[in-house]
Amino acid sequence: MPLPDYHMHTPLCRHAVGEPVDYARRAVEIGLTEIGFSDHSPMRQDNFDNWRMRFDQLDEYVGKVRRAQKDFPQLQIRLALEVDYFPNGEDWIRELAARQPWDYFIGSVHYVSDSWAIDDPQKAVEWKNRDAFEVWQIYFERLTMAAESKLFEIIGHMDLPKKFGHKPGQNCAPLYEKFLDAAKKNNCAIELNTAGLRKECREIYPAGEILQLAFQKKVPITFGSDAHAPGEVGMNFAEAISLARSVGYQEGCRFAQRQRELFKF
Ligand SMILES: [Zn+2]
Ligand SMILES: [Zn+2]
Image 1 (cartoon, rainbow, N blue to C red):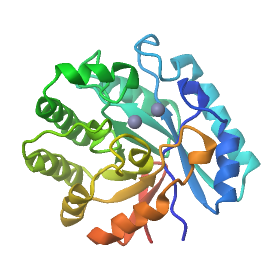
Image 2: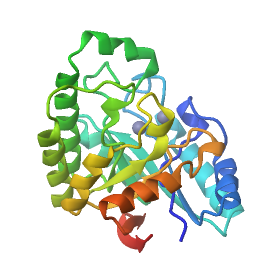
Image 3: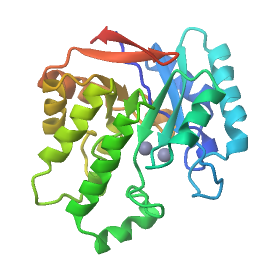
Image 4: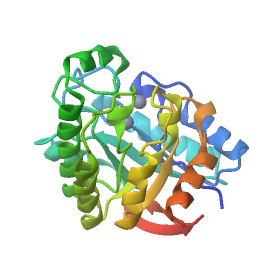
């Protein structure tokens, strides 16, 4: 069975190309049977940053996904969001959740403060002023809170701070374990996100040794290309399957109306 690709974007986020129908067409072309759109969610303030849809575009987003569902009835298309987690930002996420019959929310931490998104290429220079271990600690503290919030079915790109190739010298295993314990306890899946292979780190998120810990703790997984262009749909999924199998996984999960179902691969 082909894997569902649960992480893809649309031009509404201002840094992706191709409409949902184009991603769906590509998915059918490469033999996928299920995909999910998870564009960057709006913030309460539209001017918070410049890489997400505005709040007044949320209905347009849903309309574009519905259009793809109509045009490609042979493909299961899920309606979702990649939502930025902020401590104290939980009310806003609940408001978003209540607005549409979402299939799932991917909770992601991009920001380790209100002004710095660690994966933003335009702000990558900030890494020079920071101690990598300190960034890892803040990031994983937030990621653990995201899992504990119970607002998300899936946590996105678990080891995102490695994106530009930074790695602390310290042992980070306790940070990973604390997060994974929270994910397991709160019924949260993590994604195998192949976009890391296209970044400086040249590695799937999360790294093999982290995925091994996740398997030991029985944390469920999903698969996502994090496509920002139709040609990236399902990209490097063969590598993702072999990584998952190499640590012991034989099952992934899918979501409809925020309910989880397992599938074998
Ligand atoms: Zn993006
Ligand atoms: Zn992301």
